[in-house]
Image (tube, rainbow, N blue to C red; front, side, top):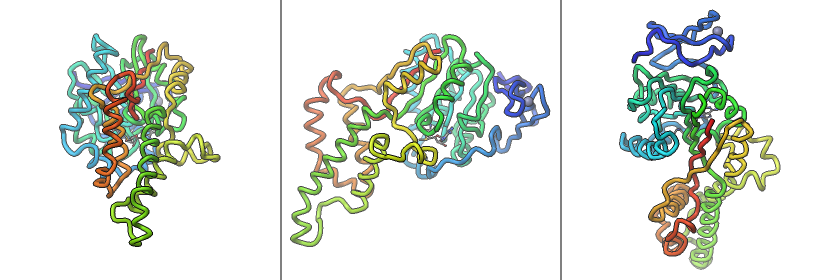
Length: 348
Ligand SMILES: C[S@@+](CC[C@H](N)C(=O)[O-])C[C@H]1O[C@@H](n2cnc3c(N)ncnc32)[C@H](O)[C@@H]1O
Ligand SMILES: [Zn+2]
């Protein structure tokens, strides 16, 4: 089905009541006021003044999406979850918030069950790639923050965001809005960092920092160098990662600086569940990533690796730490730690 000359579910950003209609010339026209949303290179400038992301978009895409296979893998994880969340596959009208370069849009735009897909982001760099990976006649690519979007009540089946809700300062207001856009029985899925899982990352970082001191500092005094030790830069990075994870607990000015920082929240699982219920969702659940075969421990190890920067090879000294945990806590689903990132499923 083509969207040409079709009403979209989007509401006009100017009058707030008119529906945006897609016209053959490649614009969105309000059916109630003169507002026109222009498009360039396949991207609709719904909120052209949305501030850009602070992420280095090229670095991010190279690190996370080196090939098409990366998108395929992500979509297969999402599909497993969708089978549980919406077994009948009711995902005809779907919105992805903060799509980046196509995290889930890649798969959604190729999924026959999706009839109209709204994919949005604030970042021109990501949006350009999003258009390359996921452009299709039934996909509307929108430059807009989550805060800028407005849809007709009860018009969407599914709203998704992958690692984006924690970038939105007033995410509670956005959740309230999403609740109104969803049809009865519709769902929202956000894959987000959680405190309970991230704390394990902080714990490992601290253990490695302490061990680095104990194992390598003797040499430093004696030889005036640290042959196997972590660089000053890496130790600084480790401190930064720890401060990021624990910012809500130690930083006295956290609420004042939060609007300016890119990663605004590490969600306490129960707080976000309660926020979802306050926003009007009938049910909210945290669904962890697959936990088979000690995967959670591998994810913690990967998170630690990402803060080791150019000292990644130094992790060899600390493998026993991961092996020992794998041989004990990692053996059972009951004792394996929660992953640093997981799915929050909100049911309308
Ligand atoms: C960690 S990246 C995740 C990107 C993509 N979902 C993925 O998983 O690869 C965070 C994304 O959120 C976007 N973002 C930041 N603030 C936003 C906001 N207020 N509304 C919508 N998207 C936002 C960024 O541009 C970026 O694409
Ligand atoms: Zn209007």
